[in-house]
Length: 166
Image (cartoon, rainbow, N blue to C red; front, side, top):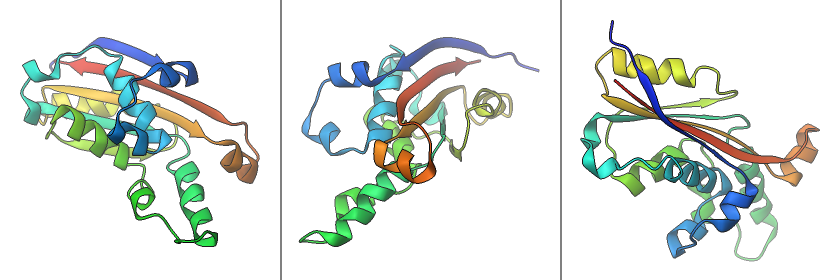
């Protein structure tokens, strides 16, 4: 069996997100996608030097897209109604799409809702089965104050990422 190696890791908190470059495209993303992208950027991996179709992405979102879903739902009460731009982010897998677009990655991807315990094993499995030569793993724990109040939890905003290779 092939062995895998974690080449890079990152942790992104609210302070890191505040310091991230803000372009027009970045500003329209939901928090989950923003944190995921900044965490992947913090890995410092030169994805352009790797075959894009052989890099997988595994993402776990502890609360799914709950915070974005709540913001989207609030739109029904405002003039103009629900936001079609925000609608695109009402699935936690949207963050995978944003990572793939940013780095032009076309390899396999998986999205989980819940804790990130399975991420490393799933990323390793993609590599060991020969579906990918490397894999980005991202765990996002994003819960706005409004969403936290609904589920009686503490607000949190952080993302962790790793880059796993053969």
